[in-house]
Length: 313
Image (cartoon, rainbow, N blue to C red):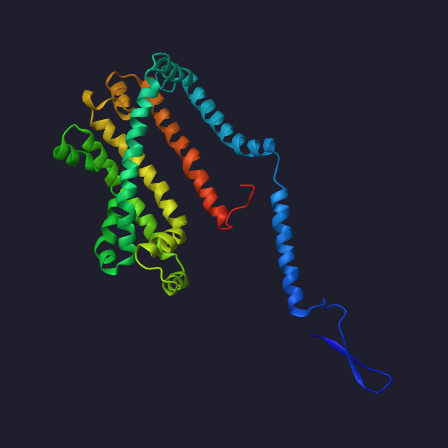
């Protein structure tokens, strides 16, 4: 604290504070800092952009990108670089989708694949989560299984289809086996990465408060590892969906029903390139929709709750 000394009439030195120093010393500084942060937080909450501007910032870039892709596709089609039965135009592919819609079969194909994907992903979560926690917390298990999980994650899912066919034949078990082997390693590795990033202080504080066993997992490990775990879940869904399409392309049987993979293989056998491209677009749209409707909002909520994302995002 900077001060100056003045002599009063009695000859005694009197101490006066520097005018630049706020009253209250350090307590005044902390109170002012806290008030300033609260003001910034309140202003950030009040200064949300209008809904129209927010929609433009979110919708216009992807719409422009889609329009550019369609324009290039149409130009290639008009230039006749490939025959139209090999490379149909956007309108031909749209006609194939429209026909399936008018025939009343489009939603059935989509639902068959989505229901398989969701069920397989749910089973993968039930298996991958405890496996990841076990690998993350037990050194012997990590040394034994950790490299195997990494190797399984890099293995193409379609490589499991021949083995699963030999084990289970043309049944749903074959499809779900391929989905599980594709998704479980990603989910387990995601939670391992999340647990590895937890500050040791959190774990020590939890033990001091009596959090042990499942209580520690529920109240400390999973909440603290949530960002990494969520990233693993997101990647696990991507692997589930890819694995499902690979399995449906090969495991083709009338008693299994027709999913998007089986539909695309049927169009391939009929040499219907418009149908093949239409199915590819449908697979892509389903993957995007799942991410936009579920994973992206959940990820934003988690990041915002931890102060890692602005309120306007």
